[in-house]
Structures are given as structure tokens and as C-alpha cells.
Image 1: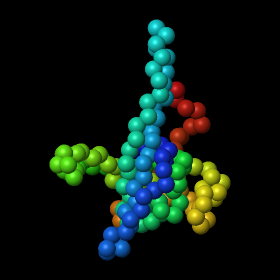
Image 2 (image 1 turned 180 degrees about the vertical axis):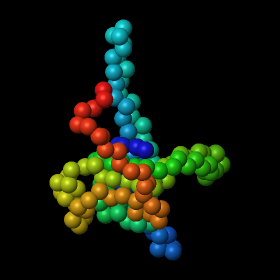
Image 3 (image 1 turned 90 degrees about the vertical axis):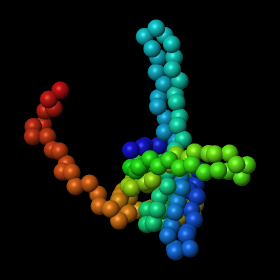
Length: 145
């Protein structure tokens, strides 16, 4: 699970079979802090490549833009390849199963080249089904802690 900001507009391509594949660079930041002895630990930003397939890719193509905040669920996939110079490279990607746009709707509406933004969060546009875990409702209004 990742929550982060989109670093650039999605890269979208369609396979010969018509399947959409969208790729997004997502930045997640761990906030800095100060230790008890006064040492300051700065913010730490990690960049992730997130891949969206089929209908989820088409949704990303329409509604996701640079600067948007999004929530992504998926699996880590590592692959290796040899580049043109024969050097072995390793790529780590997140294969998205689910996503939600967290940016305010007004931000999505002002983005160029989009139709109206969706009215509900975008979830589970792939063939798999969403988690069926029941929502936990507190019995009393008071919290136990």
C-alpha cells in the first residue's frame, strides 16, 4: 500500500491486443524528525514506478495528472534485463491492483485534457474483486483508549 504524489503525467501505451498499460512515477515521503539529542533527520522521499493494466490503466490515462495525490495497492515485481551495452539491470515495479485518487475534485477538474472527474473513488477496476472484509463499527461512542 502506498500513498504518494504523482511526479509526472502517466505514460500510457496500448498493446497490439488493445490492452491499456499505464505507468506512473509515485513519490512517497517519510517526514523528518529531530532526535532527543538534537540531531535532525531530514525528510526522505522514495520514487516508485506503478504499473496499471487494462481498465485501471484507462482510468489512470483519463484522470491522473502530475501532482495528484493517490493511494495504490499492489504487488512488488522485480525483473532483470540486459541493456544495450550488455549491463545487467534490475527494475522494481508495483503492479497495481487497486487505486484511489485522493486529490480534491477541483484539482482534477482544472487539469487539462480530461473529461469530468469521477464522482466516487476509483477502486478495483481489474478483474479481481475488492476485499470483502467487513467494516468495523464501534459499539459505544467512547473509544477504549
